Image (tube, rainbow, N blue to C red; front, side):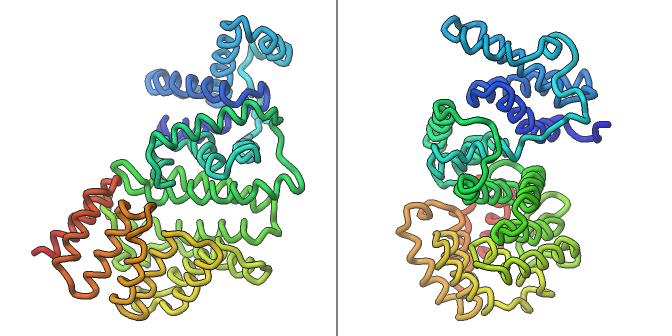
Length: 414
């Protein structure tokens, strides 16, 4: 029984499963992705009027398989590969019942696909970009925003990554031993970015895309079961749960953004907070300490505070200082500046922010301006804060964030 949900959400959920099934059966990642996209497009056009099939995954796999076989047959130079594919596919699956029609034999290859996209033949940025595209279903523009690079640059990176996968000759199997450990770091980063895109969408009319965060939590939960002793996997899952717990308070009924200081904490999910705190506490005790565990610890301090005034900012500042040692980045420095301001005053935070103004990754980013505006407001420099809020709003690509920043500027101006 298919749940009552939108076709778009269902297709997003099924896309990595269909691609994984095709790659497992036929290989050729790049052509399988093209075939998957063709099947998804056909479903998007037909299902709203004709209804969702009883076995939507099998329907998509069958349509994509036929599309793939048609493409193979259309190129004489691929005759040898055509023969191999046809020989590997029982005629009963091509002519009769849908592929993967038996629910008992159904298999979700999303996690295997995730590790394939993190193949060592790819550079770490390409691993992450390809996985966000193939498993997360993000657009090239969304991935480019996550990496702070132009969209054209990201499109080229994804194209090269597909080509590398095609020429690597890798098999569609879950890696083991040292190879799995080698890919795990990239996998965790992918899931981290995937969750963040779902929690705060980089573009579009909505602040959040819950289906992306749900998928990131689902895959990370799988990783946790696969690697129960890995403290960083536990730390990442804890971070996701502790952050996801705040989602009900992040927007008003009309979709407007509610900043952390103004959120109704009584609506935060206590079960997610409890699960997240338990996970990170266990992970930190096991060690060694990694970046995701530290970020989860920061989230736990926020979640356990009754209100903004009760937040243990000195502890948060100490954790950000540790995080900057473990995984330095401009975003970490940005967040540390806020913690510095809360502990030592807005002027001290502004001094730290000034160092980021020469960082090419942040100089045009709206979050730098928005953070500086917030600290200027705390310092009482309202005119300068309003100007920064207006410029941050102009650069923001998320409509709810843009509206929020515009409202902040208007409030100070009045």
